[in-house]
Structures are given as C-alpha cells and as structure tokens.
Image (cartoon, rainbow, N blue to C red; front, side):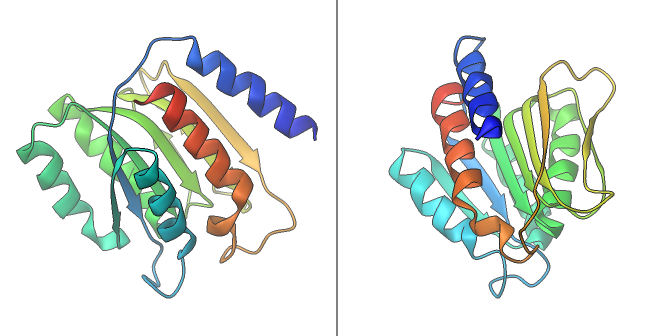
Length: 177
C-alpha cells in the first residue's frame, strides 16, 4: 500500500518534468525465449493499444534492434527487459549513448546482474529479487532511478506482475509520448 502511494507520487512528479517522446518500445525476453518471459507479450499488446510501436524480441536480438534504431535515425526509444533481457536492455542503452539516442524509459524486471544506467537514460525502473540485480547510476546520469525490491514472487513469474505492467504503462503514457 505504501509502495503504491510512493509510486503514484513518483509518477506524478515525472509527468510534470521535461518530456521525452518515444513511440518505439523494445522488449527483450529472458534466456528461454518464448517459453518464459511471456508476460512481455501481454505488456507489449497493452502498449500497442496505447499507441506505441512495440517490438518483442529474444535477448539475443539486441544487435538487430541496435541496427534498426540507428538505420531509422530514431532519437528516442524505450527499452524493457526481463532476466537476461534486462541485462540486454542495459547494454543496448549503453551502446546508444555514442549514437545520440535518448532512452526515455529503461525498465528491467529481475535482470541478471547489476546494471550501470548510462547518461542517455531519462527514467530507469528496476524490479529485483536477487542480491546482484540492482541498477546503479553511471557517469553523467541525471535522470530518475528507482529499484523496487520484490518479495513473494518467483523469477519466472515476475514479468507477468500487473503492478509492474501498470507502472511501466503509466510512465510511458505520461512521460514518453
């Protein structure tokens, strides 16, 4: 209950700060591909209904996503990942720094390993369970970073959590349109 109130205040604060327009959202599944991380399919459908262009990919497809972003000269994107896909999301954001691409939102769901959020990220949200799955601000990062400790969930089910989907949709709807 308290976490929901805190997040609501956080989301409202984001709505009244500078905007970052990103219609393209890249979602990366974990290591088991279409077997696990199926909650990202549901999230992707929801984001499409909200007017975003959504690409749900295996974590190994980050090079193809990078090439597409660069080829299309996209200036703003959002990246979401679960498990190994979370690690992929952080690495993709880091690669986009040199290309001048802003990442409006990076959302990681129990990523494998800690991640360093680069300076091109506006909002970084991370839902984690393991000891080493927190995000930390990298050099030059001036955005908003939140790590949410999740208890009572299994790693393979966390990508389906409605509370996570709702928060991602809220931030994308208020901040990245």
